[in-house]
Amino acid sequence: MSDKYYTVDIAGLKRDLLRCPLNDEIDIAALIIFGDVELTVHSASELLKRLPEFDYLVTPEAKSIPLAYEMSRQSGKKYFVARKKSKIYMKDPVSVQVTSITTHGVQTLILDSTEGEELRGKKVVVVDDVISTGESLRALEQLLYKFDCDIVARAAILSEGDSNDRADITVLGQIPLIKK
Image (cartoon, rainbow, N blue to C red):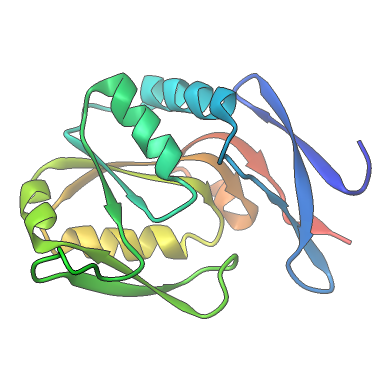
């Protein structure tokens, strides 16, 4: 493959990920699951095989929503999305802030209190597409702890960079931070 792509093995499924500049010294390999049904279905199935018993799935908006949906469909367990903006239908939204390497500036993650109460005290799996710095994961955990959730697993398709050494996450493959 060319210098434009990074090839990754995702539990036996190969994908060529576009290299995107993070800064002048480092590229990241961009995993985009939107529209890749084969990857989404495969990843959901493989992650579910590796997870403990759980009651609900929770994911941050937006790129990991297809994965959470498919995991929900295959497992029969409901999923929730921590939104980036409050919606008029939300009653007493609860929020936390996060900075991630793929989004410029500070983001907000929000759960409706009604959803939070449904999650209260339940076994929850946090789902994301890629865990890199872990900041989005940490923010989502802070949000869930406000509802006394029991986070039983953290799952993603890929880990990246320093997160490749984490033993507390369930992933299907790893990608490096690519030095130029």
